[in-house]
Amino acid sequence: MGRKTQIKCSGSIDRFEEVASFIYDRFGNSIKYIADVAGGQGMLSRILNKKYNYESEVIDPRHYQVVGVKNRESEYYSSMADYYDLIVGLHPDEAIREVVESAKVRPILVLPCCNFWDRTKKLGTKEMVEEITKWLKENNIKYEIITFKFKGPKNIGILTYKK
Image (cartoon, rainbow, N blue to C red; front, side):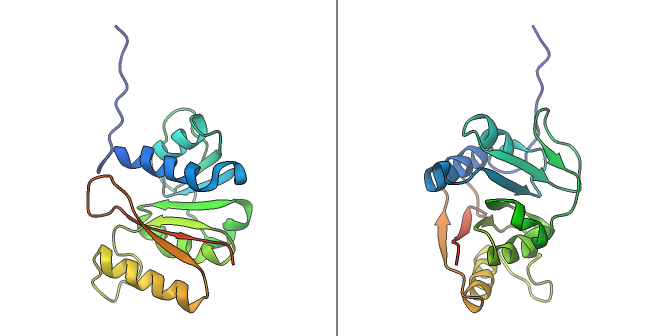
């Protein structure tokens, strides 16, 4: 028997497949390049690349991607958004503001988790989504709230559209 490689993930492992499927269902072949911001090991990018033929790369200062997943060992800044067709932040932690600000130039899909949106207030997921959508409205950015079916309280996403 060969040695099995186990990938440790916190949270629902189903989230990667469900989010990748959502992206494909929503965008199909109209996009090609995806930024997987704070994508950790690259599980989402791996599915996007292998199953849906996108060119998704992880942008994360931590370097521990699964083999075969393209990565940029760097922090993400909204100024990088021009290169990509879609910016994805699946629980992007400290990169959340940069991901959301990318909506000024590109569509984004963000699933907020920890409160790095506004460190002056204690925000749960619901309150953070409200704060982010308030910012999107102030910047005249169209959006939609998505509730994903995977387990856990951090299954609410915000999808923005081009202006």
